[in-house]
Image (cartoon, rainbow, N blue to C red):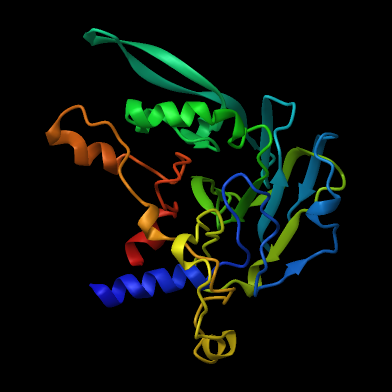
Length: 302
């Protein structure tokens, strides 16, 4: 088991194109496949002047990558246009975090509490994507600390999301910040996307013909080096390329310290503690978890 753990940690370390933590801007990915088009970088983007913008998808395009912020908007609508003329609307909604707090002196009653600016809800996919930690996973003692620093944590309105729309044979697969959030099954190909963006917003278009058989993972949101902040890698990109390894080398200090992972969930009783722990997902915004969401098919083959 130990060699497997080492391999996984090494893979997480070198796959990072650039170090980020949740809440910091995620720039466009650097891809071996290449990006078509010549558009301005994220530093030039003004996100406040967003209007509905139609982005055509040519037959040779395999993926779109779109940065966006909610900003002052509470709701954004993503429209997928299919070649038969039909459309699919997907709402992105700013939402508060909800959790239950026990009434003092009464173990049988609880009241709903809210913390603002916590997550992006996607009702069509049944997803709540937290940019601030989901408070329902914390014991009361730990939750006091989370509430105390809530205002300093990344508000969902200010978070720079990186939306990926991967074109499939029929339908499309969506990811946020490298986390797979769901698919829209269709028998017809995707021909265009309509989304509120400024005209200066950079949209990356990846060519389908240069895709590899691998599922690329963007794990920059897991970059928490901890005690390995000064780590130095002994491997280089040339050796990986010589063996067709699907990994891109980055600075060894960009890595995920698995020692930060712990269970913060309040068990109802001793028997179901492990089930509460397993309810966590990559969408909860927990700094105590290092999780990535992938489609089920690649997962079963990993």
